[in-house]
Image: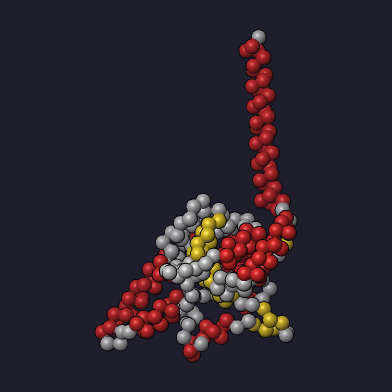
Length: 263
């Protein structure tokens, strides 16, 4: 009797477990397909929390000048990266870089450009950087000219400087810089000031203030070490379907940090 009654019970439990798992899979799929209402890159499921975070950030009045996002081992999600660009512009972050460890984002950067164009109406709001495309010393203040907000029909909109970097870019930059320094040394023109100018001209962007590392654990993945002396690194699990609230939380944490600069 016990064996006969045990079999139906086992089958019932098996059906229950499979049913619960099916429901779970359906809920996950529903969320991925837009179960949470999204508009203009903002998710309105935590409105009050978002307002509080925005107030905290405004009171702290400390926004990173250069935000760098380390994609890690993840495949790039172009709409989500475009959201990060949009949110960075709205908070007046002037420089944004994506560290592309695997080279996928750089290879398919046209997809990122298309995703950004869909979300940002002003094409001039995003200034893309390639190697030596925007020298810091252009006419003495070339970069500073580009930093000024653009005006159109009496309205001012903020610009952001965007670039994709990778370990390969860093190695190539060091090789070029070493060659230039060797030539300067042979000509007797090497100075600390010339080295500083060449470094700035080569890498264009200021050192990142804030770095967001995507993944289950914080990993720099050979990020150029000479650029992260004062960078505050925070970890986010993934950039896929990143919410506006998550982005604000990282800015809020950064705003409350005290950078001691080696003291």
